[in-house]
Image (cartoon, rainbow, N blue to C red; front, side, top):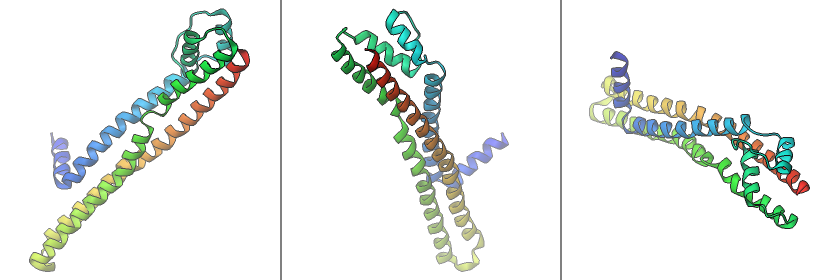
Length: 195
């Protein structure tokens, strides 16, 4: 019970900036978790290029969980048997899969960039409260001054606590995206040779 009271007091003391930071943090981490699970699934449960070529020749059943298997499945559904047309269909399939790779990455970057700005907003609000306390009762009102400075520091700290891991995860997910796109491009070249 005491922990929840402390958290509530922290939120109340930080004001609108802390609440905004919590919302931004919550949304950002929901998207990060979704992307981490997505990339984990397409990397760990995928077929090899060799298996893909074998499946194309035999038209056998396979599970469509990874990025290559989903692309191959899409191609097998759409192919017509004409080499020139099938090469275009392969490109279409790759273009259809690629947006799934990029999904939510810009939003994560934006949330990570907005967090320190919300912290800065809280800093400004806290400093305004400090100057108000000074103007009303002079430098003698130590409690009013310390409350304003404390509010300013808490929101700055919270903004950085949200932003720093968000930026790290944004870079991590961008690397995953680049790797997935590279694998898809290599797969495209291989499929075009075989078709």
